[in-house]
Image 1 (cartoon, rainbow, N blue to C red):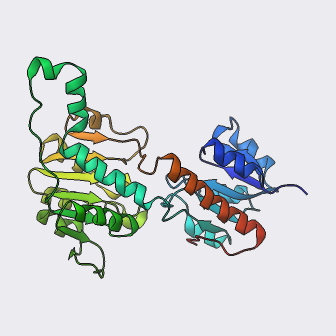
Image 2: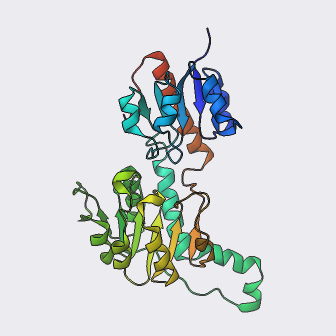
Length: 313
């Protein structure tokens, strides 16, 4: 009996590809020189698509593969998948929530600490001999006790808040509705921004949150505020963020996500008060293996006619 075809849109670790090969006939779309030819060959045999949240799957791809039953997203965010188009075609969509929540929250706090304490610059100070030649590194700013504002108090935002409590940080958050938590609620990021020392963005991506942290929110930050983003580049008005960093109204920033990844605006690299990461908040061996396992469980459940572990549509 032949294996069902699986279109692998985004590159996956070797351990995932090896495991998937046991059940599926893999079509490595990301590596194909002639992608149209691959789709044509797999038109009648490819029954599922594996993709990533930032890559997604559009209606044209679905139409090219009419036998597809499931789009399995390797990641929690699925904003680049045309979910409406999938529903219209009877295609299910899954993601990999929870398994990366704690990892992303770790990175959020790591970025905050690295930005506030200027860790990359301090590391360079030791390596390039400045410690010997120039003396002590310039003073930085503390993190503990600062007032933290979280944009998006979902799974990841809540995990960030739990960590921030250990730093004795008073917490506020913005969300469309008040949640049953002991934190101060604000209806919008712009309403939250004037009341915090650190603004942490952890909202889900997608059309509903595009530009959610707008110019009004960024301009409302206190002088000397710290800004961190572990959500999606689309959630933030990047032009307004760049202007605030350029004018140093934002004292420090830790950024894991950007518009136009990986070809981000080159101005970010010119700022010595910004810590940059390559959209790698979930990028540990342990978490990526958990993500791959959950994605495979969704794929196999669909092929076996079992309930999907983590459907989103």
